[in-house]
Each structure stands twice: as C-alpha cells, then as structure tokens.
Amino acid sequence: MRLVIFSCFCFICSFSNAQNSVIDSTRKVYDELYGLDVLLHNGQKEFPYYMGHHGHPFWRSEKPFEADVVINGKKFSKQLLNYNIEKQDFILTYTDFNGGVKRLVLNVSAIDSVYTGDLIFVPAHNEDILPRFVQLIYDNRIKCFKGWNKELKVANNVHSASGFQYNKTRTDFFLYDGVTINKFHNGKSFLQCFEKRNHPEIKKYLSQHTIRFKDLSDVDLQNLLAFCAKFNP
Image 1 (cartoon, rainbow, N blue to C red):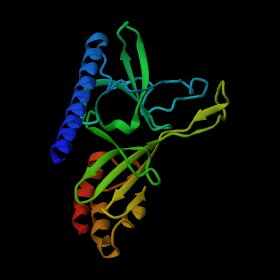
Image 2 (tube, one colour):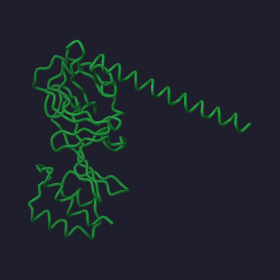
Image 3 (cartoon, rainbow, N blue to C red):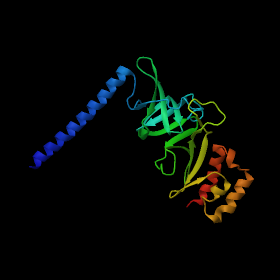
Image 4 (tube, one colour):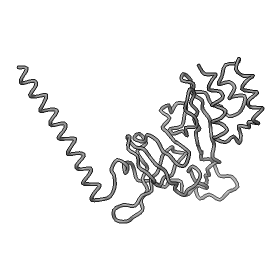
C-alpha cells in the first residue's frame, strides 16, 4: 500500500514539474516569436479617460520617464513608464511585434518596486492609510514614505472640454516606527511622531538646520530621519 501511495506521489510531482516546464517553454516560445515578455506585458490596455480634462493625472509630466521595474522578482531595465498618481497605476509604453507603440496599465499586484534616478516607488500594502504606491524616502530603524496624489475638481477659470481640471500635485509624508503609521506635513506634526521627552533635541536640530517642511528636499529629510532614528527603540 505504501508503495502505491509513494508511486502516486512521484507521479503527481512529475506531472507538476512537467506542467511547469510546459508553461516555461511556452513563455519562452512566445517571447522569441513576439519579443515581449509576458511577465512584464501583463495588464490592461490604457483608456485615456483624462483627455477632456484640463491638465493630466501623471507624476511630473505626461511624457514617459525611464525606469527599472521589478515584477515578481524579475528586473526589467530602462522601461518607459508613466505614474498615474490619481489612479495609482503605472503605465508601460512599449513597441509591439508589429512596430506599433502601445500603452499598457500594468498589473499593480505584481509590481515589487520601480526605480527611476535616485527615487524608489514601492507598494504600500496598507491602502487604508497610504496610497497604493509610495516613494520610499528612508528605511532603517524608522521608515518614511512620500505619497503623491492629484485630484479632479470642477474647472474654474480654465478651458476644459469636460468641465473638470486636475489640481496641483499634492505630497503627503508618513512615518512608520514599526508599530504605527503617522502622517506629518510640518514641524508640529513631525514632532508628534516621537515621544515628548525627545522634542527638545529634535526642535534644536530643526532650528540649527533651518528645516522648512514646505520645501524640504528628500536628502534633507533623510538626514533629519537619520538623526531622529536614535529615538526609536
């Protein structure tokens, strides 16, 4: 009886391995025929719903930016992406096997990270508090994220075919101490992320380095967080 069970187990494992091999070989054949990796080119065709609105919903510009994107652990270098910060999607611009330029809304659940220049975007995994994707500012004893967003509103004093316009890009900052996520936007709300007994030292740093959160650079924020990390047990 044990021999029968063992034989069945071996058959199942062999069948599973064979099935995986077929899937892998099929993907390889597809890539060789069409020049497209199905892991990357996985999503939905973009519908440009924003065309009639004044402005656009993208991070920085309507023009695609070059980035490295990691999907299910595999890195795809020098891809052309747009980051829709209204919908929190990444859109891939690519050339298909017929030479046509296409735009694809990537499967967000498969994206591990996106790197462009010195910036890193990662999934938030806590959409009750954070946007779907956040920029990782600092990752040590404490973590800091920057959220990017645009909202659609009724158009005022601008020409808009739809009657709507996008507001200016808004950024929100979040600090994670390993237990809770706290949102901050100025010195007062930043101090509230730490215990009161540490406020004098932090205030002294803010004063000495003339920290103004309204126009604080990522580098200056990283230096501030490196200083404040010692207060987190």
